[in-house]
Length: 519
Image (cartoon, rainbow, N blue to C red; front, side, top):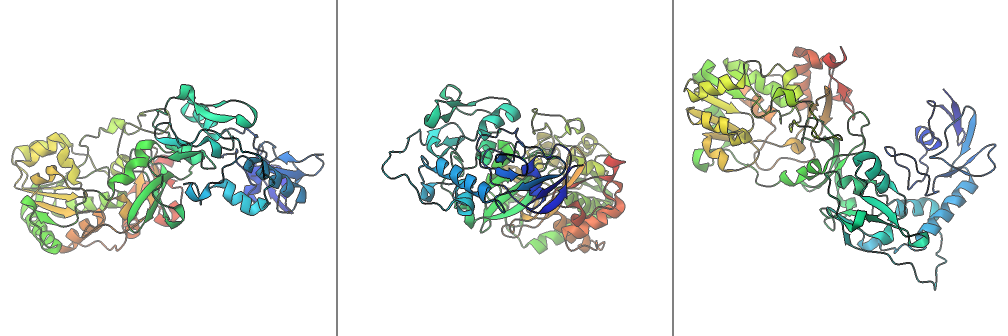
């Protein structure tokens, strides 16, 4: 492998590594506009100029591969490189509207950041009128402001290489060059939000997030998208217990730098229509502790005549605790309602989405759930052979087969996150946290176990599903020695081959393959 010296630091890199990538490995971020880790190199912005020994001129770091013995000086140690970047910034800002106070990109703008790091020059544009371009152009789910565009072509390359829709193009020439949609039409695919993410300035903005919140007021929490079995890595941006947006978090092994728009919109349902208190049939609110005692009493009486229906929307920790609960009273357990196993790895499109719209189907299969068959379980419910039915997700009552079977069960318990008329079929409703309000792990279609973290506390009396199950187990006299989701994972790893030798800490930010996947 070639060795390269960057700003006096020698490192060894893989063959074919570009100078800009090698600099990142050396701890130096070379300024850029057009370069993106998951897009082909274009080299048009000229912002990443560096000085390389034995080269007569400055070179672009994004388009220059490392060779053995190469010596590179970035803007950190090269006055020539720093001056070149300063001149590039001045050129880009000549016709820029400088409307930072009203721009949603403020706080995340490459122009702002790089001007502070590499510019700090006085404008020499005094009398000349700036070139004016189209502003506030509605192109579907995003807004276009062509005056802010630095013509980096990231969005065009994204459309060409990732979605393969080619809906964006350059029009006009010289200083009047700007981006435009094909024939002036809207962006119509389900990956439009990524155009906002790839734009380094405020030219492409999300209509959904526009004018909602200044980004410096938001906190970031790493999470995993619960929208399908791909398990895209995401960041939840939130403030004061409210989620404001979801953004992709780069993981080359799973989703690169992208997420779909349906996944991006999932933040909207976190805080709306939530179940916040425990209640009985008809909506009569009751103390949660009293309702838990009532459920325990019913389960003790029912014993093997109880049934438990898990959900692939639950985390591995939730599913393990729920399984232990079912085993503690000898009840039957399954989970495949509306989610055939053969859809786990089937693609919905050729980018990220999959037919299985649940995040943890594979995790539940690894835990051994779904052995007896849900059809037989529901048939017994319908025949009156089940005295107590515990639903890990109240949303299961939206399934016609479950709702019909529940009519003939004497006592139905729903651990629910969201309100709705479907919950009228439950005799006991226990409020539960959603994925953004708890710690845990999902196992995606490819057997990658990935961790998500609590962004904020659940509303009212809602608790994580694993915590509710452990509370029931404790009152049944069969406690599990766990106080956190990480503790539950440790217990689960002892009993489950797929998760042997894994812990929350060892998963890291990118996740790891389950044991049976690498066997």
